[in-house]
Image 1: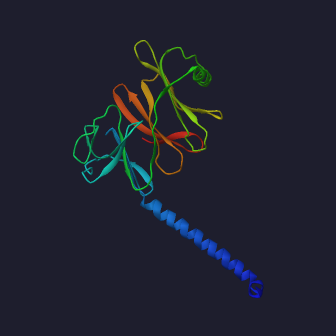
Image 2: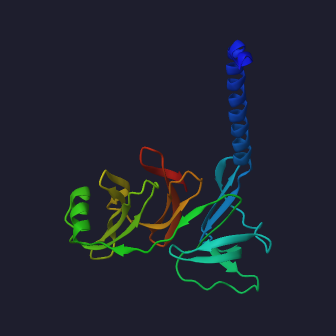
Image 3: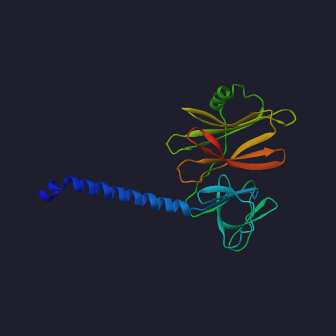
Length: 246
């Protein structure tokens, strides 16, 4: 005890140094993990993204896909399992271990990664009268047009408070898209992700997943322009959802 009192300043300095070294070790360890993280995400064979060296880039060549590369395969509301993939003419084909092709309808998303990618499975819900009142205020318009309106309920930022994602598409008598919009709403937020009038683009929320382990979900939106379908990822930047990958 007398030794500690006598050398108190050295004990404190040594403790501070030890804490500093431990913190720096964990920072370096975490940095090394991040440097080694890799992921591939492919949607419908139309678009793909690869995470490597701490950045996302588009995948343009799918020749690397073979029987040794297994991907976790999803629709928006169902997990199919692990399959090998092939991409041909902007179409995605998935095969099980018996080389039987996965039979599916609609869109298909697949990913392979050496870290956790959290996929939120959901079903589209019809809007109700209360939703109509909310949307009337948001878009300052009466929802009595020829329209398609759905919603998805999800806790986007893991704060134990549910957000509602509204998906709206208005059409004229010739089925031309006069308005297409995606909105995120809760009691404290009214956010427009995309909202376009007099447009031929028709937007939808196709997948919801956390691609970077930040405990916040990214939104994968489809945009249909006549017969041209594409996908993009929107990420919560802290100031709202912004275009992240396309």
